[in-house]
Image 1 (tube, rainbow, N blue to C red):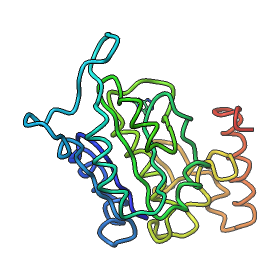
Image 2: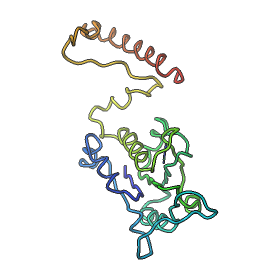
Image 3: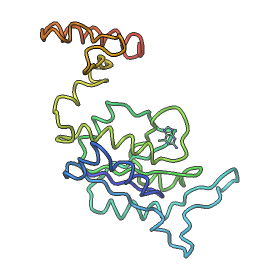
Length: 223
Ligand code: 6GU
């Protein structure tokens, strides 16, 4: 999987994803990550990429040309790429969308800032409008990073244990059961007896019940 991020803040994306499991996946070549600086495609001597909105109103709008040229520099090497525009006006991201997107060879993420991007270039290049929830962020970089993290852990070889991607929360539309590790007792609180029993059938049954109970309590909307 190759991720290409069009952004005004390439170091934010590269630094933010260069740690832990995703950092290791990049080192191991399981995924590739490239951040393209939209400002490098400004054609004026001040490297300006935004301007006042036609019709008036607050803030600035990112101009079509540098966004289009940045897109072109990446897209010319890919046949019909998915281009994801991060916007609070998009469909809300979920695990099902992550599974769908994880089948692509390349994904292009377009991160906006200010009051948004000139609609004409969005019409020309964007295939998917995606939000990460009903609140407003200052830019698309954090949402792109959230999506890249979520999609990467579904890519073969990124997680060490092949099973763990399947069995975690939202697989089967259920929340995961509680986990415990040593010691057996912490500040008077004991690990549930069944987990020490060695009875794997009983343990599986207990986990199933806890998973259902937790989903009912915290996310009844999933059931
Ligand atoms: Cl994708 N972008 C911005 N700016 N804010 C958001 C968002 C995206 N998703 C939720 N809030």
